[in-house]
Image (cartoon, rainbow, N blue to C red; front, side, top):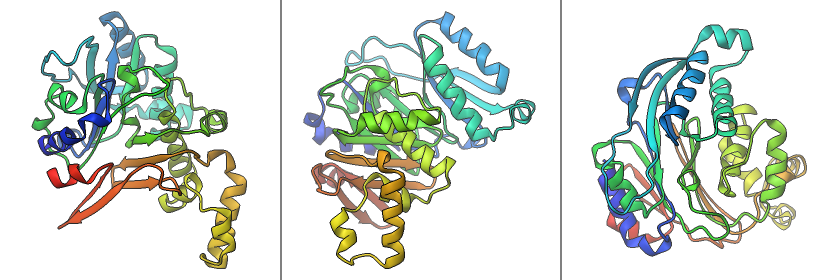
Amino acid sequence: TGEAVINSMVPMHDRSNGLGGGFAAYGIYPEYRDFYAFHIFFEDNTTRRECETLLKEGFEIVQAEVIPIRIIPEITDVPLIWRYFVSPLKSVLSRLQLDEKEFVARTVMEINTKLKGAYVFSSGKNMGTFKAVGYPEDVGRFYRLEEYEAYSWTAHGRYPTNTPGWWGGAHPFALLDYTIVHNGEISSYDANRRFIEMFGYKCNLLTDTEVITYIIDYLHRRLGMPLDDVAKVIAAPFWSELESGRFSPEETAKIRHFRNVYSSLLITGPFSIILGFNNGIMALNDRLKLRSMVAAEKGDTVYVSSEECSIRTM
């Protein structure tokens, strides 16, 4: 359940400053496993009704409800928080000649860029993200995450340095079933953003982490690139490594190709990243290891964290 994950964040309290906390959980909606679960923040009920009208144009809404929360003094300025279990209309997909994942991704972009006062912060199947302005352990209690059971969890406490703390800016960032939690500073953000926005993505959430989610969606879902190759694009080996003979000639040629063709998707600066997706997780460090990352295994469970203390707690 979410209780163990919430408890694991407590010893890392001072890694964040209360301006953003969040969780992603996989396997939490087995009864709606075949439907996309949209988690949406609304400014008011007028915006909610506008958004529902937009959704009904392209989706069958099989369930719409307020996400259960626990009112606590540590979490303030609470928006309306709803979830919708939806299925894209086959007639719409046929008319637009899109597969359902592309249609869902475009709908999320449309709502988040064009509908003022609405923000879709989760949109995958049988999973969900939960985030707010607050410390992560408080955010977990706020969303009553001890009541959910999942086979995979990610969690994050934010310490924003050059962007504001707001509900949408907390991690994880999500698109479809991809979720990203990230520590560090992306010095390549502008180059990454300019490249990815050529393909219909919109980076307007006031944080550099957002672009990582879109890069992975573009490379893995749209281009069909395996995740180990996605890692070689985002955190590419140094040129010196390629010249050292460490890799086979075929692998060296492939990495050189990635570095030349996708040079604008290379992420530079200190970072540690955890990608969550429906089949597991992938953890990435910058090549100089400038942000801490500890990995562990026990039984059939894998742990990745900024600090060993959280793994020991679990």
